[in-house]
Image (cartoon, rainbow, N blue to C red; front, side, top):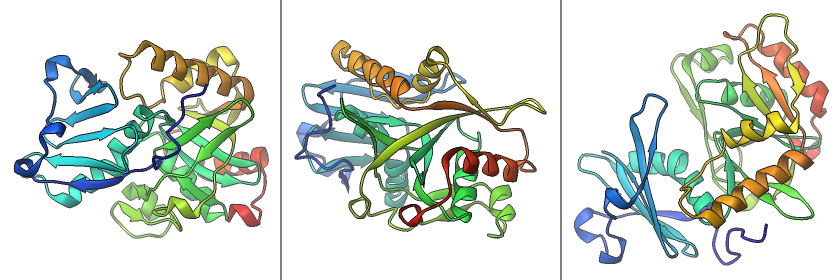
Length: 294
């Protein structure tokens, strides 16, 4: 487990947007025939990814191409025609950055995160599963938001640690109304969220895997390692599986994580009526907010 993000490289490189005609030749996009293709659940192409040595390319069709290497302090983005710079920035922070971190040696879960008294609680799940809603609900009870959609994790022999990444919070319209934020989806800047240097790494205390629960089912239920391992892999950001050594390292790290950190199933029914009960269960399980969690 010795390949982490290089110590000389920032965990979250800054974004540099360049016009296509000014793109350096060394950053030219690779042929898609040579790239790994990532698809969504419906089979549509989400991204093409390719690595060559320490250089990486990621193309999001119709949106932008991102280029970076293992040690640079920046990522170069080339917008596709008609895509504005602010849209590229949004795309980078929410879609590309987790894959950049993973390609450069880290591990990142598709999860929201909240800092509670025992450490960071990661809330894993698919889009629209309730991650951001639950995290923001805990925040309203006094806990510090840690992440929205991407929890970076460092696995060493002595500790499993959540690392701070820049983020903002995006709430769907129904959730925004529930919390009295007005109609329409809300984007909220969390305190220190865009300045990860102001937040120290924290222990990863637990991972909750969100799923739809049957009426009357327990809200929190521990998962066996044989259940937790595939559940976490299903929520792991991964740039490419073409490098056997990097793939094995990723698998070994998640094996270590499930052996050392509690992984629980969190039953989330449709609708927001049971949100208070879900928040109560998480507070009972992982503690009251302390000075460092606020």
